Length: 86
Image (cartoon, rainbow, N blue to C red; front, side, top):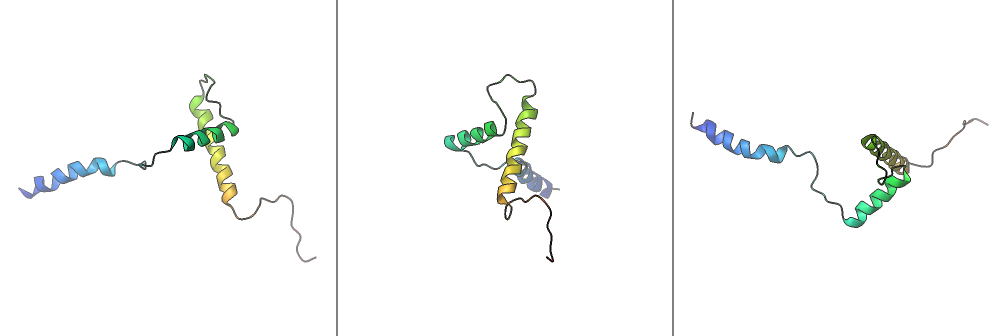
């Protein structure tokens, strides 16, 4: 019975440290400014009093993530059909 508190007390203090899902990285002022400029290019305007603020910000973030994924892909995106054997 005495071993139960010895086990629970350290576990109690360790749980908050395990519960943080975000990283401890902080952005510098220039990185935050660059990110804001990218969001503005993606269609987000921080100066507008918008009732749909969270949705528009999330849409701009989604656009940025699609652009980053496309930039990281191998080769350019190609349209059209491909004919082989000729």
